[in-house]
Length: 143
Image (cartoon, rainbow, N blue to C red; front, top):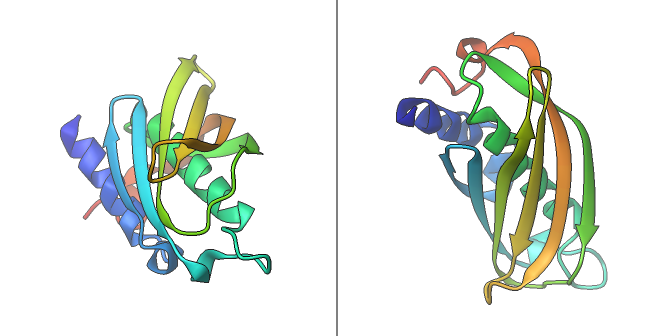
């Protein structure tokens, strides 16, 4: 499985959107962790990190936690609920996604994002399903 986890990490790094965010991700069984350094390029007009960054970190960590348990096909987010619990302006942001339930048709995953002091700043949960697209055909996975 370690090979699968490294391929998922490569796939994440290959996504064009991540050239902007410069995240670092690690994947393990049923879990993924992502780190991003918050700075003014991620701010909304009032000087704090925009909610879309929280969502991206939470959804990505949850998505890859689910993906860690699926070795054949790409998974898809079907729903995701996000709660922003504390603002942040700068410093490390770390999200952790964990699969809390799975069955033949879906994965249910919870994720939490923390600031540099390890305080919760947001949380979310989502439902993910298997697609028909083979992982081997996804950019970055087969590298």
